[in-house]
Image (cartoon, rainbow, N blue to C red; front, side, top):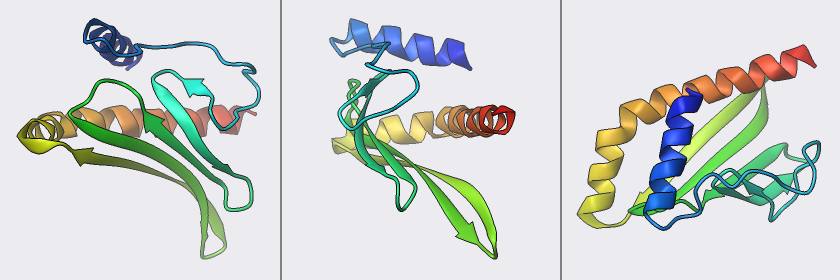
Length: 120
């Protein structure tokens, strides 16, 4: 669903947001403070295998996206968490209207990450 991501970036730019900032110092290594599309890297924890991103796009609230590798019953799996703190009725409306599209978008993102990791 790259087209949806691009559309969201264009809408964000029109609303005065950062849009889809592409590029960072290194494509191979992510660092705290790096911009990743319209996300900012807040935390990289190599010991607990966590990555926390903060949304800098225009939103009626605040959003975070977290990835963590966890172990359960001797197997490892990738957990993805989308957190949204709505601001007022606009924020709540935004979340409920876009919950289903976000579900499919984030599910596809997780699948793509796992496929790319399996290739390497």
